[in-house]
Length: 80
Image (cartoon, rainbow, N blue to C red):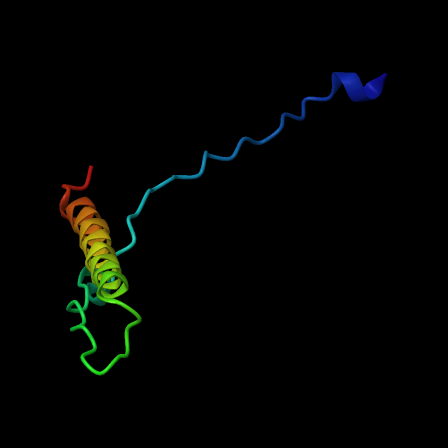
């Protein structure tokens, strides 16, 4: 069993360095467009449906602003 008595030892490589890097978020991702004005010429079936549309537009805008605010706060956190 000549192979068992060999003086060869495996070479150990140093562990790779792991670095966590936050990606920069483009500035245009940190801003929402202004809420669109209601369309005056649009023939809405009823004032109720028009009101529901307006509320949906406002809710979508608030959702966008809240999400982008969270991204901006995340980016402003000090890096560790």
